[in-house]
Amino acid sequence: MNSKPRGKLAVGRVKFFGRHRGEVNSSAFSPDGQRLLTASEDGCVYGWETQSGRLLWRLRGHKGPVRFCRFSPDGRLFASTSCDRTVRLWDAADAKCLQVLKGHQRSVETVSFSHDSKQLASGGWDKRVMLWEVQSGQVLRHFVGHRDSVQSSDFAPSSDCLATGSWDSTIRMWDLRARTPGIFHQELEGHRGNISCLCYSPSGLLASGSWDKTIHIWKPSTRSLLIQLKGHITWVKSIAFSPDGQQLASAGYSHMVKVWDCNTGKCTETLKGVLNVAHACAFMPDGKLLVSGAVD
Image 1 (cartoon, helix red, strand yellow):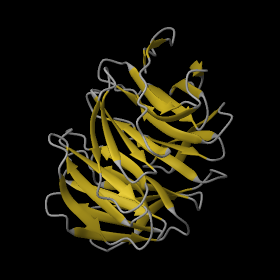
Image 2: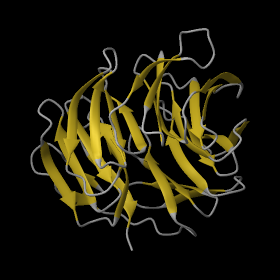
Image 3: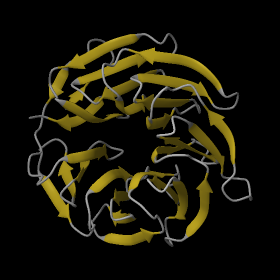
Image 4: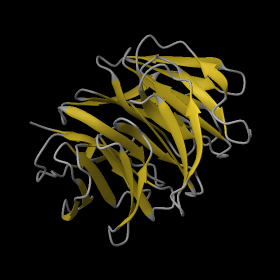
Protein backbone atom coordinates (compact mmCIF):
# COMPACT_ATOMS: atom_id res chain seq x y z
CA MET A 1 0.00 0.00 0.00
CA ASN A 2 1.30 3.47 -0.73
CA SER A 3 0.17 6.88 0.41
CA LYS A 4 1.31 10.48 0.07
CA PRO A 5 1.75 12.14 3.48
CA ARG A 6 1.96 15.66 2.07
CA GLY A 7 -1.58 16.93 2.06
CA LYS A 8 -4.35 14.43 2.65
CA LEU A 9 -3.20 10.90 3.43
CA ALA A 10 -5.04 8.58 1.07
CA VAL A 11 -4.60 5.01 -0.02
CA GLY A 12 -3.12 4.89 -3.51
CA ARG A 13 -2.78 1.15 -4.05
CA VAL A 14 -3.35 -2.05 -2.10
CA LYS A 15 -1.70 -5.36 -2.96
CA PHE A 16 -2.15 -8.68 -1.20
CA PHE A 17 0.74 -11.08 -0.55
CA GLY A 18 -1.02 -14.22 0.53
CA ARG A 19 1.13 -17.30 0.04
CA HIS A 20 2.64 -17.58 3.51
CA ARG A 21 2.25 -20.85 5.38
CA GLY A 22 2.46 -19.25 8.79
CA GLU A 23 2.02 -15.93 10.55
CA VAL A 24 4.13 -13.02 9.25
CA ASN A 25 6.39 -11.69 12.03
CA SER A 26 7.92 -8.72 10.22
CA SER A 27 8.36 -7.12 6.83
CA ALA A 28 10.75 -4.67 5.21
CA PHE A 29 10.89 -2.59 2.02
CA SER A 30 13.95 -2.28 -0.18
CA PRO A 31 15.48 1.23 -0.26
CA ASP A 32 13.84 1.96 -3.63
CA GLY A 33 10.51 0.50 -2.55
CA GLN A 34 10.42 -1.96 -5.42
CA ARG A 35 10.60 -5.10 -3.27
CA LEU A 36 9.12 -6.28 -0.01
CA LEU A 37 10.56 -8.86 2.36
CA THR A 38 8.39 -10.83 4.76
CA ALA A 39 9.63 -13.01 7.62
CA SER A 40 7.33 -15.89 8.39
CA GLU A 41 6.63 -18.24 11.26
CA ASP A 42 6.86 -21.04 8.68
CA GLY A 43 10.67 -20.66 8.66
CA CYS A 44 10.91 -18.96 5.25
CA VAL A 45 11.84 -15.53 3.99
CA TYR A 46 9.63 -14.30 1.16
CA GLY A 47 10.50 -11.70 -1.46
CA TRP A 48 7.81 -9.85 -3.38
CA GLU A 49 7.55 -7.33 -6.18
CA THR A 50 5.83 -4.43 -4.47
CA GLN A 51 3.74 -3.06 -7.32
CA SER A 52 2.54 -6.31 -8.87
CA GLY A 53 2.44 -8.45 -5.74
CA ARG A 54 4.35 -11.18 -7.58
CA LEU A 55 6.25 -13.67 -5.42
CA LEU A 56 9.94 -13.50 -6.35
CA TRP A 57 11.26 -16.14 -3.97
CA ARG A 58 10.55 -18.28 -0.95
CA LEU A 59 13.84 -18.87 0.84
CA ARG A 60 14.45 -21.83 3.10
CA GLY A 61 17.45 -22.41 5.32
CA HIS A 62 16.46 -21.25 8.77
CA LYS A 63 15.62 -24.11 11.13
CA GLY A 64 12.98 -22.19 13.03
CA PRO A 65 10.53 -19.30 12.66
CA VAL A 66 11.98 -16.20 11.00
CA ARG A 67 11.67 -13.27 13.38
CA PHE A 68 12.97 -10.24 11.51
CA CYS A 69 14.29 -9.09 8.13
CA ARG A 70 15.93 -5.98 6.73
CA PHE A 71 17.57 -4.72 3.53
CA SER A 72 20.99 -3.11 3.56
CA PRO A 73 21.00 0.63 2.76
CA ASP A 74 22.68 0.01 -0.61
CA GLY A 75 19.99 -2.52 -1.49
CA ARG A 76 22.49 -5.23 -2.41
CA LEU A 77 21.93 -7.45 0.63
CA PHE A 78 19.28 -8.39 3.09
CA ALA A 79 19.43 -10.13 6.44
CA SER A 80 17.05 -12.42 8.29
CA THR A 81 17.01 -13.53 11.92
CA SER A 82 15.48 -16.60 13.46
CA CYS A 83 14.62 -18.57 16.54
CA ASP A 84 17.36 -20.94 15.37
CA ARG A 85 19.83 -18.43 16.89
CA THR A 86 21.35 -17.39 13.55
CA VAL A 87 21.44 -14.42 11.20
CA ARG A 88 21.50 -15.17 7.49
CA LEU A 89 22.92 -12.76 4.93
CA TRP A 90 21.47 -12.97 1.44
CA ASP A 91 22.38 -11.53 -1.95
CA ALA A 92 19.43 -9.38 -3.03
CA ALA A 93 20.14 -9.94 -6.75
CA ASP A 94 19.89 -13.73 -6.86
CA ALA A 95 18.56 -14.47 -3.34
CA LYS A 96 21.51 -16.73 -2.49
CA CYS A 97 22.62 -17.14 1.12
CA LEU A 98 26.09 -15.63 1.51
CA GLN A 99 26.74 -16.06 5.23
CA VAL A 100 25.24 -17.79 8.26
CA LEU A 101 26.23 -15.81 11.34
CA LYS A 102 26.39 -17.90 14.49
CA GLY A 103 27.08 -16.74 18.02
CA HIS A 104 23.81 -15.91 19.71
CA GLN A 105 22.62 -18.30 22.37
CA ARG A 106 18.90 -17.72 21.95
CA SER A 107 16.45 -16.39 19.34
CA VAL A 108 17.70 -13.40 17.33
CA GLU A 109 15.06 -10.66 17.23
CA THR A 110 16.62 -7.68 15.46
CA VAL A 111 19.22 -6.85 12.85
CA SER A 112 20.41 -3.57 11.34
CA PHE A 113 23.03 -2.46 8.84
CA SER A 114 25.48 0.43 9.11
CA HIS A 115 24.85 3.17 6.54
CA ASP A 116 27.77 2.05 4.40
CA SER A 117 26.38 -1.53 4.52
CA LYS A 118 29.73 -2.86 5.77
CA GLN A 119 28.70 -3.74 9.31
CA LEU A 120 25.69 -5.44 10.83
CA ALA A 121 24.33 -5.49 14.37
CA SER A 122 22.11 -8.20 15.84
CA GLY A 123 20.39 -8.71 19.16
CA GLY A 124 17.96 -11.05 20.80
CA TRP A 125 16.80 -13.05 23.77
CA ASP A 126 20.31 -13.71 25.07
CA LYS A 127 20.39 -9.96 25.98
CA ARG A 128 23.54 -9.51 23.91
CA VAL A 129 24.30 -7.28 20.94
CA MET A 130 26.77 -8.54 18.35
CA LEU A 131 28.57 -6.44 15.75
CA TRP A 132 29.60 -8.25 12.56
CA GLU A 133 31.69 -7.49 9.50
CA VAL A 134 29.40 -8.10 6.55
CA GLN A 135 32.01 -9.17 4.01
CA SER A 136 33.76 -11.77 6.15
CA GLY A 137 30.96 -12.70 8.55
CA GLN A 138 33.34 -12.26 11.47
CA VAL A 139 32.28 -10.97 14.89
CA LEU A 140 33.83 -7.56 15.58
CA ARG A 141 32.39 -6.73 19.01
CA HIS A 142 30.07 -7.98 21.74
CA PHE A 143 27.94 -5.57 23.74
CA VAL A 144 26.52 -6.72 27.06
CA GLY A 145 24.43 -4.73 29.52
CA HIS A 146 20.75 -4.98 28.69
CA ARG A 147 18.78 -6.74 31.37
CA ASP A 148 16.22 -8.30 29.03
CA SER A 149 15.74 -9.26 25.38
CA VAL A 150 17.12 -6.87 22.74
CA GLN A 151 14.30 -6.22 20.28
CA SER A 152 15.39 -3.26 18.14
CA SER A 153 18.50 -1.56 16.82
CA ASP A 154 19.67 1.17 14.46
CA PHE A 155 22.95 2.79 13.47
CA ALA A 156 23.45 6.55 13.71
CA PRO A 157 23.85 8.28 10.32
CA SER A 158 27.59 8.61 10.98
CA SER A 159 27.75 4.86 11.84
CA ASP A 160 29.93 5.66 14.88
CA CYS A 161 27.13 4.85 17.30
CA LEU A 162 24.63 2.02 17.62
CA ALA A 163 21.33 2.33 19.46
CA THR A 164 19.61 -0.75 20.88
CA GLY A 165 16.22 -1.09 22.52
CA SER A 166 15.23 -3.75 25.01
CA TRP A 167 12.40 -5.26 26.95
CA ASP A 168 14.14 -3.75 29.99
CA SER A 169 12.47 -0.49 28.79
CA THR A 170 15.79 1.24 28.10
CA ILE A 171 17.72 2.40 25.05
CA ARG A 172 21.47 2.01 25.11
CA MET A 173 23.88 3.91 22.91
CA TRP A 174 27.08 2.05 22.08
CA ASP A 175 30.15 4.03 20.99
CA LEU A 176 31.60 2.09 18.07
CA ARG A 177 34.78 4.20 18.12
CA ALA A 178 35.71 3.08 21.63
CA ARG A 179 38.18 0.19 21.86
CA THR A 180 36.78 -1.17 25.10
CA PRO A 181 34.41 -4.04 24.26
CA GLY A 182 30.78 -3.75 25.19
CA ILE A 183 30.76 -0.51 27.18
CA PHE A 184 27.84 1.79 26.48
CA HIS A 185 28.30 5.52 26.83
CA GLN A 186 24.67 6.60 27.15
CA GLU A 187 21.39 5.22 28.40
CA LEU A 188 18.03 6.75 27.57
CA GLU A 189 15.21 6.11 30.03
CA GLY A 190 11.64 7.33 29.99
CA HIS A 191 9.49 4.68 28.38
CA ARG A 192 7.26 2.62 30.65
CA GLY A 193 7.22 -0.45 28.46
CA ASN A 194 9.32 -2.62 26.18
CA ILE A 195 11.22 -0.78 23.42
CA SER A 196 9.86 -2.24 20.19
CA CYS A 197 11.44 -0.10 17.44
CA LEU A 198 14.17 2.49 16.89
CA CYS A 199 14.95 4.83 14.00
CA TYR A 200 17.49 7.62 13.47
CA SER A 201 16.62 10.73 11.48
CA PRO A 202 19.00 12.04 8.79
CA SER A 203 20.14 14.74 11.24
CA GLY A 204 20.88 12.28 14.05
CA LEU A 205 17.75 12.51 16.19
CA LEU A 206 16.54 9.17 17.54
CA ALA A 207 12.92 8.01 17.65
CA SER A 208 11.80 5.10 19.81
CA GLY A 209 8.49 3.25 19.87
CA SER A 210 7.28 1.25 22.83
CA TRP A 211 4.73 -1.08 24.28
CA ASP A 212 3.62 1.92 26.37
CA LYS A 213 1.89 3.14 23.14
CA THR A 214 4.09 6.23 22.85
CA ILE A 215 6.92 7.43 20.63
CA HIS A 216 9.80 9.46 22.01
CA ILE A 217 12.09 11.66 19.92
CA TRP A 218 15.48 12.15 21.54
CA LYS A 219 18.56 14.27 21.01
CA PRO A 220 21.19 11.61 21.77
CA SER A 221 24.10 14.04 22.17
CA THR A 222 22.46 15.60 25.23
CA ARG A 223 20.36 12.56 26.28
CA SER A 224 17.34 14.88 26.21
CA LEU A 225 13.77 13.95 25.34
CA LEU A 226 12.53 16.48 22.79
CA ILE A 227 8.98 15.30 22.07
CA GLN A 228 6.63 12.59 23.27
CA LEU A 229 4.03 11.46 20.73
CA LYS A 230 0.78 9.99 22.02
CA GLY A 231 -2.20 8.66 20.11
CA HIS A 232 -1.70 4.99 19.33
CA ILE A 233 -4.13 2.61 20.96
CA THR A 234 -1.73 -0.36 20.89
CA TRP A 235 2.05 -0.79 21.08
CA VAL A 236 4.12 0.80 18.35
CA LYS A 237 5.42 -1.74 15.83
CA SER A 238 7.37 0.39 13.31
CA ILE A 239 8.57 3.97 12.84
CA ALA A 240 10.24 5.81 9.96
CA PHE A 241 11.46 9.35 9.35
CA SER A 242 10.76 11.16 6.09
CA PRO A 243 13.83 11.91 3.92
CA ASP A 244 13.97 15.50 5.22
CA GLY A 245 13.48 14.41 8.85
CA GLN A 246 10.47 16.71 9.26
CA GLN A 247 7.88 13.94 9.50
CA LEU A 248 7.65 10.63 11.29
CA ALA A 249 5.38 7.75 10.31
CA SER A 250 4.38 5.17 12.88
CA ALA A 251 2.53 1.88 12.64
CA GLY A 252 0.85 0.50 15.72
CA TYR A 253 0.21 -3.19 16.25
CA SER A 254 -3.32 -2.51 15.05
CA HIS A 255 -5.12 -1.07 12.05
CA MET A 256 -3.70 2.42 12.66
CA VAL A 257 -0.88 4.28 10.88
CA LYS A 258 -0.05 7.85 11.84
CA VAL A 259 2.09 10.66 10.42
CA TRP A 260 3.52 13.25 12.83
CA ASP A 261 5.08 16.68 12.52
CA CYS A 262 8.45 16.32 14.25
CA ASN A 263 8.68 20.01 15.09
CA THR A 264 5.31 20.40 16.78
CA GLY A 265 4.65 16.82 17.86
CA LYS A 266 1.18 16.96 16.32
CA CYS A 267 -0.37 14.08 14.44
CA THR A 268 -1.10 15.41 10.95
CA GLU A 269 -2.67 12.31 9.40
CA THR A 270 -4.18 9.01 10.51
CA LEU A 271 -4.86 6.07 8.23
CA LYS A 272 -7.01 3.23 9.54
CA GLY A 273 -9.33 0.52 8.40
CA VAL A 274 -7.20 -0.98 5.62
CA LEU A 275 -4.96 -3.34 7.64
CA ASN A 276 -5.76 -5.40 10.69
CA VAL A 277 -2.14 -5.22 11.86
CA ALA A 278 0.49 -2.85 10.44
CA HIS A 279 3.99 -4.33 10.34
CA ALA A 280 6.26 -1.80 8.65
CA CYS A 281 6.23 1.71 7.27
CA ALA A 282 8.85 3.41 5.13
CA PHE A 283 9.20 6.68 3.27
CA MET A 284 10.48 6.60 -0.28
CA PRO A 285 12.82 9.23 -1.77
CA ASP A 286 9.85 10.79 -3.61
CA GLY A 287 7.97 11.26 -0.33
CA LYS A 288 5.50 8.42 -0.74
CA LEU A 289 4.74 6.38 2.35
CA LEU A 290 4.70 2.60 2.00
CA VAL A 291 2.97 0.48 4.62
CA SER A 292 2.78 -3.29 4.93
CA GLY A 293 0.79 -5.43 7.31
CA ALA A 294 -1.70 -8.23 7.72
CA VAL A 295 -5.38 -8.67 7.02
CA ASP A 296 -7.76 -11.44 8.04
